[in-house]
Length: 239
Picture 1 (cartoon, rainbow, N blue to C red):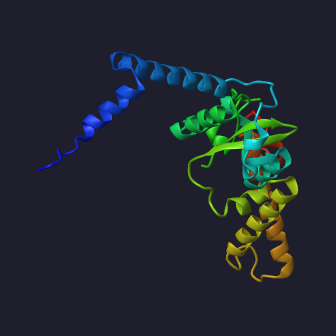
Picture 2 (picture 1 turned 180 degrees about the vertical axis):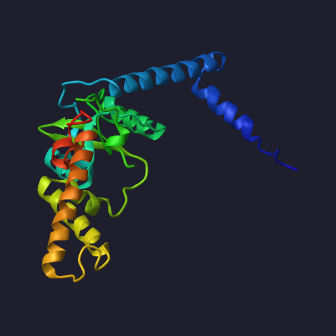
């Protein structure tokens, strides 16, 4: 054979030795990992710390338009789907590696240290003080927020319609009435009177409505539940 076969490992070694000092290569790699670990620890510290800072020093020329949201838009979505928008320090779920990586990439891209992180998620994913689809945000300023990362599964397609009943007291009354109506139709004919009439049906419906309403009120007060409009940005369990 006129030409020797190519050894890829040797080619890699030659290239590496051109770019880095082979005698200190291991030390250089260790320093890179060490710097990366320090950076990640700083990010985790910022995620677990509440701050009054309402903006970060982003390079607006590098922001992606589709990731910018106003507080009013976030509020509406949280109310519609019964979600909370709170400081990341209250998040009790496990942040995926992809979220940390997204923060590191964004900080490198904008040459800044991000703080004031907030997360949209259901109440069960937060450590709330007593008095399935997280989104991580960082404040830009003037009530605008930048979406950094999304993970987990999407919400149930019927969640918005189900949570509509918990948006306000009036909506809850409608739910109470509908449940009472269903229970009334489930009562066998002639259970209370021999002849079923419209007035009898209305009386039974009224009785059912009072019973269901009593259960709803007891459940609400006992467990400290509140309406979507009151809890979307509250850190308290019984707000």
